[in-house]
Image (cartoon, rainbow, N blue to C red):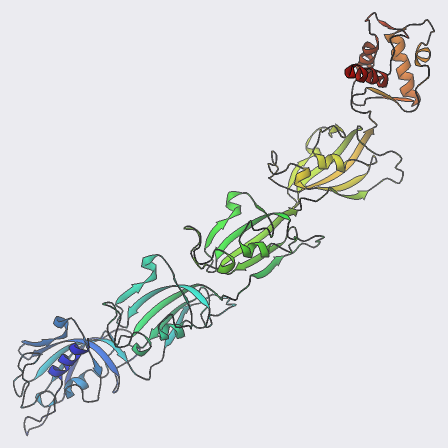
Length: 569
């Protein structure tokens, strides 16, 4: 490149020689194409780069930088060009085109030029140069930056040692493009202020915000200097970059947390080992989204602090309340690192998650019961085998109503301990008085578990509002009737109401009803009493003759004992 410049100088440089004793003409300049915007004009001492065609007044060409494929580069006003051309380029703008007519005394005078490397220039010849200015700079130039757009909120600026990801368009000063990250569909990722970039870019990126667009103009001595860069950046070229900052972080960064909303009451916060269900929106720092649980209409469910999620999220999920909303910013070294993940998240990407905690629990959690209202007198409470009727509202912990007994004509009836309802609800209904109200929190392992149920999400903690409406004391499983104290001994004479040594169904029914009425015995609740009594009678009428005699009558405990002895034999 330097040898080409040397050849050009041989053609257009020389010693000023006056050609005639008459009045001397000056350079004639025709500015036939001037850019609308001209931020800078050529002055003495500036370095310039321009293309030109040199002709005689008859139009015959004697030299052309276009044909050599390399523009001229040099300093203005220091005698390195013929005087006329030195004057002719002063005041030019980049991309300006002008015709400079140089009289002989400001060109090669009465001597002319010998034709190396251009054609022979006769003595006393007027020269015409058609010039287009490509570049202009000065050794006193500094990096110039101009912000084109900037987000309203800018909480962090690029500093030395930060790692950044940005898009850029790179052009020469005359607007000719030489490179673009957009065309590669990938950001440029690098450390700032550590020598990985040209000096001017290192300087120009300092102080940018994520989301900011900035123009950076870099003089050649802070770019690629005399060497240029391959075939795309010529020697001593001023570079113009339009930069859009995607994100930034520092290798020393920890996660950043911004609490958006906290519930009024928070009795418990997440800890390592808890299982959490949360919704999230995942974005990059420029606001573009990469994932959201809302679109799938399903929470993200995971254990906390046990390595099931990326390191930064594992840390960010600790110390949260149910219903809390927070924004967490994860640096790449606590997310997906330099490799990223697939086509979804690029390497070295800072991730921003807006989180809404739906619920959480611990696998060791028990049913949580809080009595909200209780009658003053409570002599009878519910227990296993009792038949109860109750009112309920079942919600998720965020208040989403799942089911309610109010949606049905009658409140539900169930027998406690009979596996008729989920285990946690069964436990929450025990020990209640009629009229009592309570709130019961059921963890998923005592509810519908990981599979959920119709209308109930997987691993959901359930919130029940309960009221006991009715209570009928029950009998143990396998029994249809129980004595509430000691049974009559002997039993048959007491049952034989008319003392005729036999007990038909009518007499048996009357006897059982007397025990129930007097509170000495209890039938299984929730079933037809006459049906139960008939089953009991048929069980004792062993020869099926329609009556029970003393030899047939046995209590269930005696029957169970006989059965056990038979099995042993």
